Image: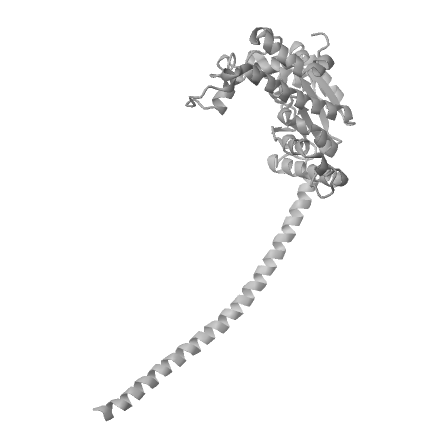
Amino acid sequence: MAAQSKPLLLLSAWAMLEGLRARAQVLGRAVRSAGKWSRTLTRIYSTLIGQRERAYLELGRSRSRESIDPARMVWIFGSGRSGSTWLRSMMGELKDAGVWEEPMVGRLFGEFYARAPKDNLRSADFVMGDPIRKGWISSIRNFVLDGVRYSNPRLGSGEYLIIKEPNGSVGAPLLMEALPESRMILLVRDPRDVVASVLDAATEGGWLYENREGKTNARPSKTERRPNAFVRERANVYRRGVESAWRAYEAHEGPKVLVRYEDLRSDTVSEMRRIYAILGIAVGDEDLRRAVEKHSWENVPEREKGRGKFYRRGTSGGWKEDLTPRQVEVVEKATFPLLERFYPEA
């Protein structure tokens, strides 16, 4: 039995080896074929990568040719609750105009620069150091223009862009340095009315309170716990923003106009006509009147205006009723230089 099984074992082993050899040959052909395919795919991929890069470059050149002209960018700086939404809405009615709503690019760069230690500002190693200012100012310019292209992709080089940026006013000096050909509006409002408006919005039931605190938040808001501290904080926010915007306004050599909310409310058509004339923007009188009428206080739906609403009063001097004597004192002390400059008669 043992003598007969030995040949069978040898034959079985031989058959196994033949099977393995055949599989190895098939595998070898597959590997060689895979190698050829891999090299072919690599060549195709490299070609596509090159074509993609060339397409990106061409797209960049095309966008550069078609992008907004910085000279047609109109920046609105100042402070929140100063009528910037209203002004932006009227100017947004211009033919061939777009709107960039609160990009906050001024806050992005302005806050970082303002908080930087002085030692950092003196260093060329710091990303916004004064020794390399020319470089990062150029970067801010490119950052803004790229942002415009992506936020308003259909806006052409011959169109205007109205940029509402009151809450980014801390960075106004940097933005105007980076885009010196831009047009600039400095919109100011009596700081007492501004603070009164924010206080109303941030109190329970107000639109700002609902946005920030939430209806289910049982903890009293800061306006309820420490209203005078809230008033002081908002007065300082106003001062920082408007002071920065004023510095930018004084240094700016391009078209610029100073607008007081109170004057805009008093005679909107005449004030808008003055704004356009100073900025060098042509607008037909009928188009201007139509825009003013469309966005007038009277045309705001009743359900959208009143205490606690975004559209609250539409008048000036309401602070006399809304703020306590102590709160008035706090605001006037914090913003005295600005009151003296813009509201000397008050």
